[in-house]
Image (cartoon, rainbow, N blue to C red; front, side, top):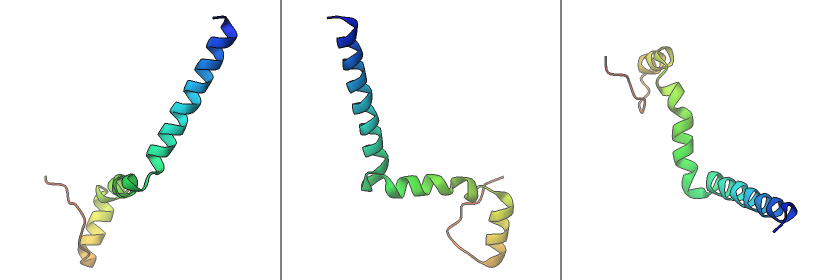
Length: 65
């Protein structure tokens, strides 16, 4: 096999890997998990957590000191 064949195989493999990652990231089964992960920085923010606690909102995680 020459260089062009290997280059073509590598390109096809890279495109398939990219398509697989995109499919995995946008699959419906991962939506809730990624939304939860996206909220983590806000849930661990002491200022936001304190204001939510004062407002009486539930569902926030507070850091144990």
